[in-house]
Amino acid sequence: MYRALALPLALLGARLVVGTGLRMAVRMLTMVLHESGHALTSWLTGRWAVPMLWVTIHGDQRSLLNALAVTAAIGFGGFRAWVARRWVWVVAAGVVLIVQLLCLTVWRFYAECMIIFFGEGGALVLATILMALFYADRESVLYKSWGLRWGLLAIGAAAFMDVYRTWSGPLEDLPFGEIEGVNFSDPTLLTEMFGWSVPLMVDRYLRLARLCLMALAVLYTWGLISTYLEMRSPASRAERIDTA
Image 1 (cartoon, rainbow, N blue to C red):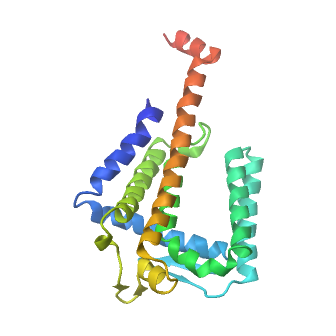
Image 2 (image 1 turned 90 degrees about the horizontal axis):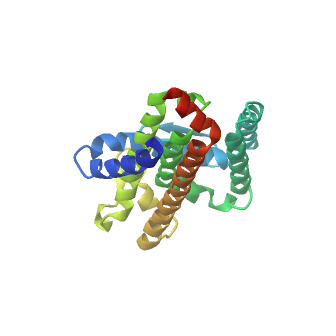
Image 3 (image 1 turned 135 degrees about the vertical axis):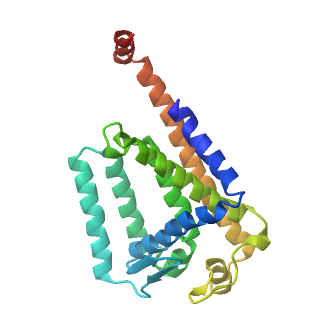
């Protein structure tokens, strides 16, 4: 029942919330993921970064030391997951390592643009990951900490819908302009510095959002099927009979 209802209801509830005055509170959660997106992209491109409230400070040049530090962190996480036989996390570490390699080679000329884009883009991806953690393995700390995974699901859904509403809404509501005491906003930088048209920028954010929703749909379907197969297994039926 949880796997059938939790994710759709979380997204629906979040969509309703961001349409009310409570959106200001949600924006604080989104801001954390937004700045984390800037910082993570900077690290993957070999630059140092420090996420702060409403701004992320990052280096202009990539550094071999920074790149090696990130690679070592990814490798250590993958090794610990391998030892613990957490195969999903092993695969995740491998994917992140490939992304880092692409950021340092093929995509290195677009580093600054990527860092800016993956403020809002990073918020979408990170919010998706938070929602996906609801499907953590039964033996994991996340699953056993019942309230934690529900909390992450709610935070992820709220932040995702907040960003999605921004980019699927009227163009006049897009956050163009200058953030006082910080810099120009991300949309302003993408259009003025990198020459993106507004329709192109909106399309890219919405494409990313839909990709995230597709990934969640696959995970949701897998969750239903795996639960159904588990409930149909002889061991599960025997357990229910014993309980009765």
